[in-house]
Length: 297
Ligand code: G4P
Image (cartoon, rainbow, N blue to C red):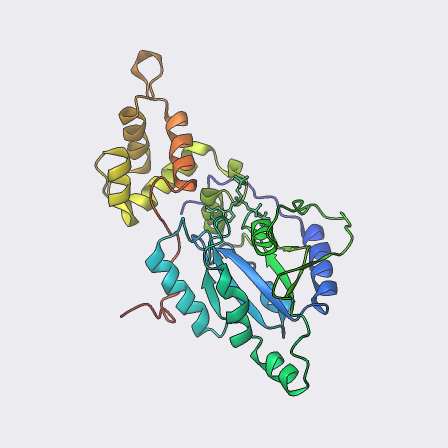
């Protein structure tokens, strides 16, 4: 990834510090943390600080937007996280797919010691209290709405916005803290920022749309040539440059300016929009780390 052309990414340490304090303050109120990440970017959509923030809390990882991700790779990621000791589930918070398993799996895995303790002390009726943590746009509000069965007000991502603490009681007695913790992604590696811009998790003005789209097309040509070929009916191969691919898409779609010039800006917007909405197929941008990659069968 060429980092020269990526604009400086805004990073607000003060903002993060406030968020961290708010999350820590609420941590003692919950029994477990539900970490929600994007199934298309399971590495980039995590904030590494979550390990320190949640430290000893039982946790589960939800790979959300699995309807947009490569299902084989999602399975590999679920196995990868499980192999690191954190149970994981693939879910789609838009349709609700996979969410029925959340509480039962939590109780059987991370929360088992607590459940056993409660059973021993005749306290099985005590509610399980959960906090949802994740980066912006990953689906935290959708998750709460799905679990609680209704549309709730979107949580403010801005710092300094104080809200009354509210618990949302689910049918099975589970209580959700209706104030998801908003973590910011970490851009230590600039390619993380680019992948998050592909999915729309962060503003795509870190790069001009054409450069962003060319980078996406190059990745897709190398990793998902068939789905691209099907969508745009053009020849894709790893050796064809992103710029050439973008021109081919514009030409095929008849996106022309006067004088026979291809409107590459329009083509770029189309490619990015179609990727984000799943029209290019189910695509995952990251594979589990080699060493622990347990998907080799
Ligand atoms: P946040 O609270 O973490 O910031 O995220 P939020 O729930 O607002 O979700 C961000 C966007 O992602 C929303 O789309 C939401 O519908 C979409 N989304 C959430 N979960 C899923 C999923 O599993 N699959 C898919 N395909 N999309 C998901 P939006 O365009 O911003 O809003 P809207 O079109 O739903 O109104």
